[in-house]
Image 1 (cartoon, helix red, strand yellow):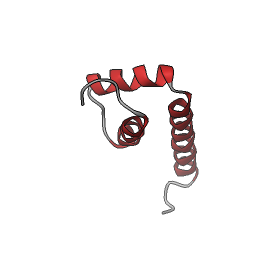
Image 2 (cartoon, rainbow, N blue to C red; image 1 turned 120 degrees about the vertical axis):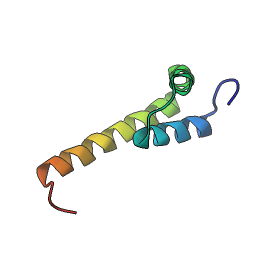
Image 3 (cartoon, rainbow, N blue to C red; image 1 turned 60 degrees about the vertical axis):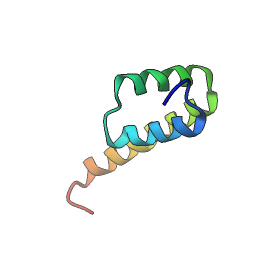
Length: 65
């Protein structure tokens, strides 16, 4: 991973970030890209919304699968 990430890599990093912790360099590269790319900020916001919705559902009915 050299240079600035493209949207495809940012999408991967955002998705992976849901499942595991990013390294500080990965997080910094992601944040730099998000500053300049509205599309990726929108994807990040959509993923955050889905995370909150899933957490809300699991709190409502923790025994249901």
